[in-house]
Length: 137
Ligand code: NI
Image (cartoon, rainbow, N blue to C red):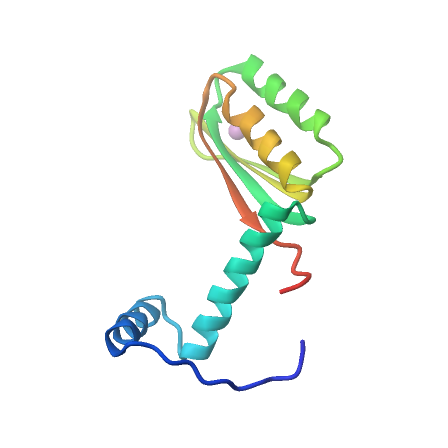
């Protein structure tokens, strides 16, 4: 972590009121922490758009009873073995499985993996959580 620097920000009063209301709703204890998170969120988006090394997670919900679907999902994951660092399978209920696949690598590969998994018939929901390796934040 770098040296802490204080700086002044000028804002319209109504914009600041809306910001204060928002950070209260989000449980921030001070403006500085909320502002730091906003800045980091922008930096993470920049890492994704510029193709830097990123980390994230693919979450999938799918039908447990489709055996061929499970094999297809495994085949796809083997093809992306270089970016998958971990995966967890949770039996949600009698019919539904939840799978969380942690990834680290290029944003393009993470997106291609997600698109490949989501488009398999029987996958009810799939989403890519775009996060960071923590470097540069
Ligand atoms: Ni299951």
